[in-house]
Image (cartoon, rainbow, N blue to C red):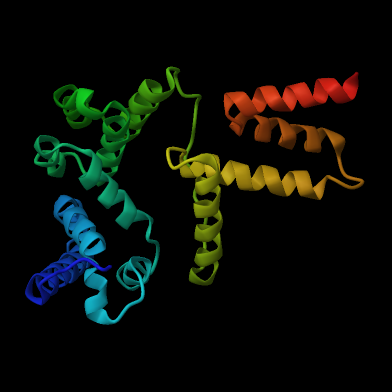
Length: 232
């Protein structure tokens, strides 16, 4: 059964979302300052099914209208609202939503034991890239390898298939994986397929090794055990 909601409240929330999105487009330099409020309203639209006010079939259809380029940011903002404690959300406007997403990863893992004050202080003091590395080190227990930012020129007509491929890879690898890992998975899959028949065996081996890295521990052991049985 759909949840009960008042038409007045639903209309208010939907109007606020449209106001924030319109404000974002005109205030490029200040676009992060209302992301906490936007995430809260989006969560309310999903839980209250306010999208029915516009005769839509689902919450995803609602997001497609408000975020035509990519729904990813909307889900990021909702994750921040859902996982960070209220005292942390009050200060997130000072650090920006990208750092807020990193904080949400830690809060999701630690739950009630999340050291909010310490990590908020780090978020305020560190540049974005350095803070992302610090969070990844905390989550994985190891320093990240050297990295660089690569820019691509993409046409609007190319974006839907690329976004869909990355979202699908994220579902396979886990939502905690970065878009860089997802892109590597897609490229490794392409190389493996391209070199499967009469291709370069070294490239095929390289691609398979990268796939192996993405497997969880139990699946790695099962894969190695299967190889040992065939070899014997």
